[in-house]
Length: 85
Picture 1 (tube, one colour):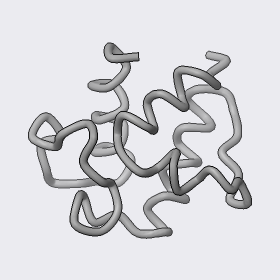
Picture 2 (cartoon, rainbow, N blue to C red; picture 1 turned 120 degrees about the vertical axis):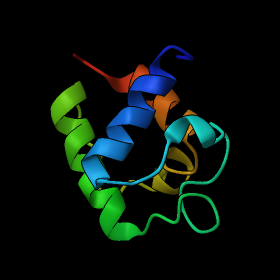
Picture 3 (cartoon, one colour; picture 1 turned 90 degrees about the horizontal axis):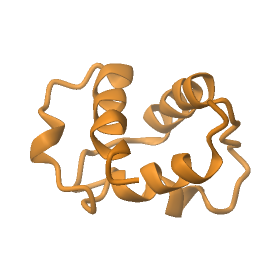
Picture 4 (cartoon, rainbow, N blue to C red; picture 1 turned 90 degrees about the vertical axis):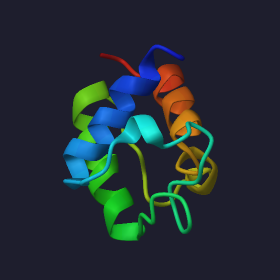
């Protein structure tokens, strides 16, 4: 899963056209609010890209979404556990 962190970081930057270096963003730092400052629209866009790239659905009605998108590490762990590609 640790090897997946840089790949997911690059995916976040490219999918959302962020002008930051994700290597400066700590894997456990929040993606929302004071972290990267992502909002619900960003998460929807990111979920679509992740679904296409890794072959599984991230549903908007999933009660675990707050945990899944809480940090880069949490997102990478979820992708590692769910991916089919």
